[in-house]
Image (cartoon, rainbow, N blue to C red; front, top):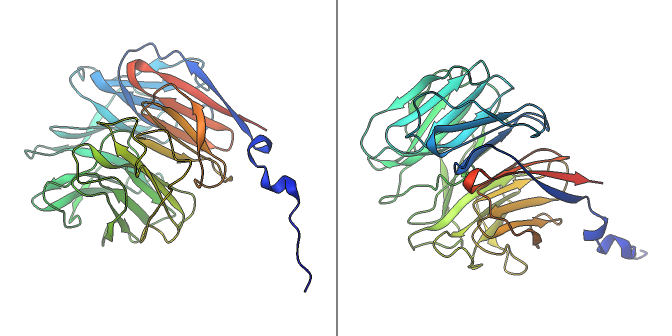
Length: 337
């Protein structure tokens, strides 16, 4: 049998890959933006502190303030957009609150209210335009899980997975929960242990366990995860109290989240609060307070893309997406082939 020789150019991926361009955009706000949801490369929504909600219909050339009236004391840590007109926003803190708009943010209606002491919602995600879930820190010994079957117009409490003592996630970017296909979902937890829990039937049953990510210290754990297939995923985090530390800040799963392996070399340059896959490629981005990093080889090695700090990112298409962060920071990420 003849040996196959690989051409040398196949071993030089970086300069042949689509090179992204990061372009700052004017948000018109100084709010801390942590929620980000992109419908396509023209329509996106962002949310954050001070009850702030923004929307663009032209690729980010203009961002419109569509914040709910009287919501100045709320912190909308996650947003789920379905179109230019329909979106959900989630408040992190007391009370547990989700609002919905059907007219581009001109009017907002409360669709979920949880007045239980200690409630703290972390993130929400959808399988399709009707079916989705949200989760929050543990109450009464179980992770809080709620689901919807009507596009977020109504929500039902579920019997969430058993929790460790005072266990919860990090509402840092709205990406500590991920969905795939029509029934798979993963929850990333940060304290006291960096666990990933998985469901294959829309939260009816949960399983999972520990990861080798940084943990057992205040402010440490998993902050975000994303999947490129039902089996392959990447989790990022570290310690937000030590933003420059690179120890145990990224892990990869090849079996749908059952086991995780650390990436030990060429890791991101510190704590990272969000990770996303560029659809149809082997390219991934992750971001945090010390900047944004890029991987062209499915997360096995990383290099610096930008040194400006962000909280969240969204990549709706192969063409790119957006970053959002502190002090109203927004930027467009475009991949040029």
